[in-house]
Image (cartoon, rainbow, N blue to C red; front, side, top):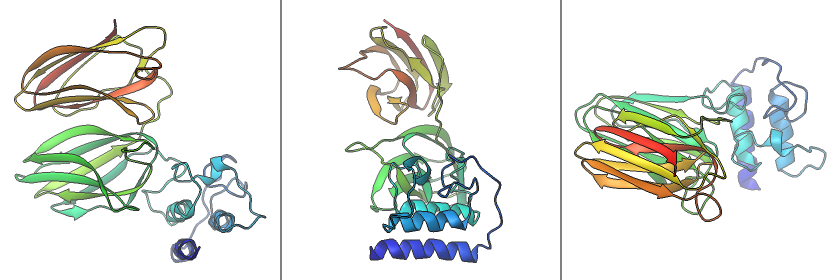
Length: 293
């Protein structure tokens, strides 16, 4: 309880120091509108804080209270809402899926940012000559959860992090990046939530590390065939992700040139139906053809 009160106190200080202005009206069901007055302001922070410390007069719906979209209502939501109200662009319950842009020069630890459950696409650029290494750190646990890139020299590429509440997955919550670099760098983080996607067959082509557009796998079509080609000298790795963030299948893990295919079953003992992405690690040209068998 003492820890909760400290965090809530910090959130209220943020509001006082931030010199709040009246924000635009929002729909009643908007994340953060605790008191249902169609606005986001300090009254919502107070309402949420009193609910969390157990005041029975302050009842909220989970849909509005889970401001940071981590599946829970706690002091993290109070902090998130307070940061939004003082104008921090990395905290926005109105647009939780907006791209997060982080940039710098040389070694650095970034500002905190929030990852919600689902797919997170990290697009990374570096113009230096030496090491370019980025670790994803969980703020709460202090653990380095994921090595996003480990290259030397100029780099431009994308990869997926599945944010999923499984045993060994990156879980929803607050994170920072620990960046090792000797030049300018930029990281753009997108957390897409598409409601639909083109059905297969689909063919994707590209070069280097990349995340192609999503595709739909529909029930009643049997197994899915992934035919993959790579012309390069280093790693060629492809992971299949469900839109939920679940990393479902390692499709290929080879070095150098590659031509091959793999059959993946769907259903109770296979991968899920629905929207999927592939995350590709490569150093050369590649092509992936996806079809029902």
